[in-house]
Image (tube, rainbow over all chains, first blue to last red; front, side, top):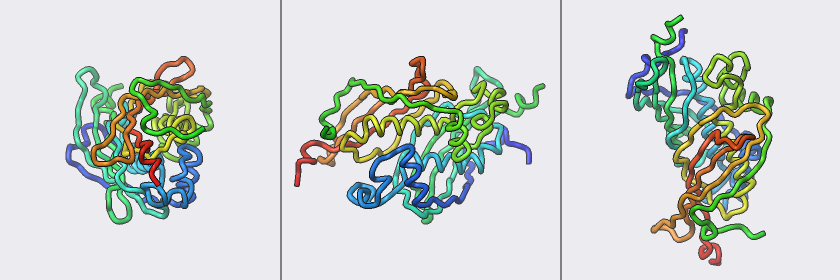
Length: 153
Length: 153
């Protein structure tokens, strides 16, 4: 299957990627490496926090989201990366043994005036848990090659 | 040393945390797990991209930043977590064998009207490379217990 260009994205388009199972071992291992706060490492410590029990680091949720969209979407496009993230909102805890999926909605497609080789595809990514509840949202402008540019020698 | 409360933070305060060495092996291992795009996995593939050579995933940069501030700051406060991230900007590539540090600047301290137990400390976190160039910025409101609340039985 040929890879997608900027022109292939339309505002309002929705797709769902995944699922991916998140285990307790993964949650604790990620936290030990990147976010060693007690509420992501230890069940008893987590119970006394607002999380109410062991839950993944918000950073871990973002990384899982990134992996799911890399496999499902980004690596199937002529991606050039992203300049950043507009916003992340952690809405619900991610518990051990959850099947997560990511719903991607194209918010906007925009071609910069100063560059003809790529365009921005701004997406809202929503991480869903097993009940289809949104546990995290992340909004990011992806840079994707334009068809004309890719056709150039 | 006793842990810090919300009242201990003042707008304009600056601190630098780290350093932490980032190796090629770490960059490739992280990308293989969470962001398997060729520009984060393979030197030759990376050379043809805007990165101009192998560089860490933006997600990896954020995770390293998170770890540095967990050790240097967050775990030394009465932290209650964070509702999200306001913005991330990836400004320069993070190359293998770079010593990174994080400069934290308190932008705002705010006590919500509806809750008396914690306040927000909004910080600008800047990841610095070995030349003190800013390679990534991340802005996030941290939730930190108020001293009065902590003193309650």
